[in-house]
Length: 315
Ligand code: BDR
Image 1: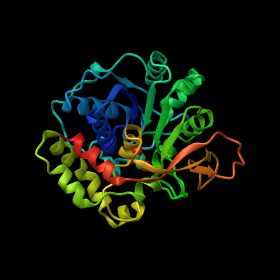
Image 2: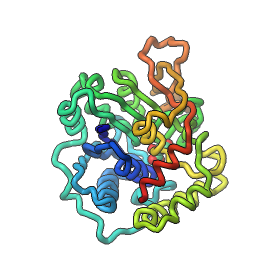
Image 3: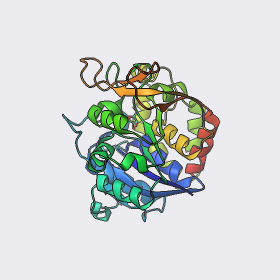
């Protein structure tokens, strides 16, 4: 079994990625940790509980994590994810926050990874604050992880939240810096540009959400708000073309199915913390000026495999 720990800022595409993981054969989700990001932390926690309830998987422990970045103010992405992170679609029967675990997400990461040393794959689809805090509390944590998959950062300095910055890294540049300085397990990164290059056709989206299942109805509803953005002229410019972009599912698919990514760029990376225009930008170091251990930056993939995982997620 593949043991997954998922760290999310549960907006719409995080919800999709969680559903992909829950449906994947041979995968066990050990826990879900919540971080500020697409929406405020309380909403993130509620959204994760909502997704687990929909999937009849409420036994999976959910942990509340960081509500703000290491420095500065929170950034949110309500233009894509709506005011509540799930497209502003109300759910009167949403579970209450009393079912959250008592430990902080950072403590939970350390506990879970220690319980299954060298066996846990961590998939992080939001700002990296929880992981950075955990790494600072236990500097041996990265070497006890099996793999780390991140959705975030960029490879061609094309931003989606600032000129050069991808949202998850912009929402906590210091955390991204800590994680990408202290990593010592194999680390795989689905950058913004990688996901944009592999957008899915809207025809696929229509077929996906038209399946006659509660989960498809839910996904269709929560995607409504973001679709207006994605299909606008501005959205298409940010996306570098039109198409459906389930960003976080690219990192999840790579974690679940090793044949999904067909090529990686292996190189050191770092995160710019100071630039006026470039703060939060991930910088690739193919010449190895920084003398850092290499990460695997996703370069090409087989989108058919992603489509199969997404289809299965709504069954
Ligand atoms: C990332 O930012 C968020 O809005 C998405 O959930 C995704 O994780 C894309 O830049």
